[in-house]
Image (cartoon, rainbow, N blue to C red; front, side, top):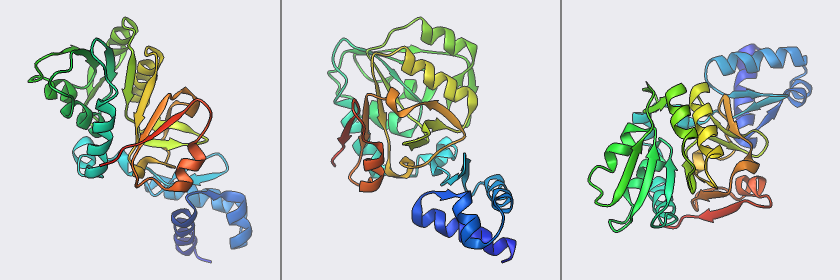
Length: 253
């Protein structure tokens, strides 16, 4: 079998099963595991999949830049934002991560809410300028333009000076084994700090992120308190994520 034929076979299997194992592929295609590993490496360099130990997972479409992500799963994100906004109570201090799902959250906060939102996203902060009774704390640093958030030592210092009631997190991949992940190392570090400095963490995940991985791990799934999904989430994906201590809420339209 030619290299390109193997690549197509691997991608077809990945789309069908949601995961491929190098050993099983080598047996099926009658080639060595080293050959399959080279194939997976080549496909990963093209952005077609995400390599993990022993095989590969689908790459998350949420790795696109902020503007392109804004056009993905719009109805789901509105439902996720509405469900998340309902969890914020008067008097709370909450972290709101950057991203399109969290932007939907702040856009749907009730005008009567009196709370403090700390964010390292200028996009999130700007969306709250007209809110009459939400105090906004900007956590500044170097602007990572791809995601529209600040990263670096300045953000880390500001986050560590706060203790939040809740962190509303955005990631680009949610996988049972790899956990929560994103596409940038510094961004992953900031997300992990936000989680560490909050009493609980709520993750809003559109269906395109479930069962996907990105290169940089934020935290294991066990670190999550609540996962908000939509009815579009597959039953198999949710079954793999269920575990004691994790509340899974389905956001309805």
